[in-house]
Length: 201
Ligand code: FE
Image 1: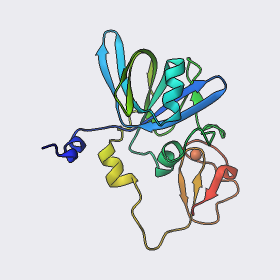
Image 2: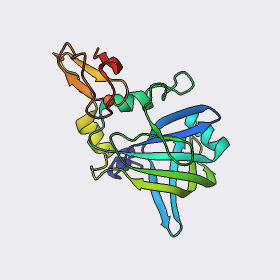
Image 3: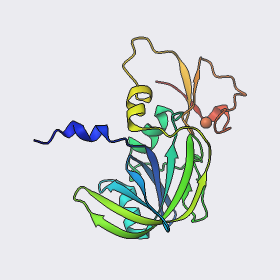
């Protein structure tokens, strides 16, 4: 027999995977990124073929992996994971910064950036495995990386009977608890002003 729950015993991280095709920036959430070798520094990622980011990496051979931390608000997973780049511009409001390969990465709620240049692809059916040389890598903070397990237990919202009023930063997902939001409020995470917040529905 194959108990499909067994794979959840493997620790997975959560990452923002970004790519760029011409003027179009895009990103999605993946849970499979890992080091393959250290000399040379190589990583692999596995991406669902249904993701627009997948097609962009197939075409350009370049991607960035931003390693998310336990501080990542649910809004970031919604922003990058629950909508398609075919319909939305996920970097329309300055949600990232550029690394030296010209691609976006997410500098907030992340602890590391790795830029990859694809050297091999493996067709895995629903997904493609990309093997890549690391062309740039930097540590952004010492905050612990979020695991899929931590996300399920601590970040993913549970149904709440009475929800507090609050404002969420559209840029980084920080939530200000209370209403109204002070007009001169500055997001403590990404430093964007009150205009970039919207009322939590
Ligand atoms: Fe913010």
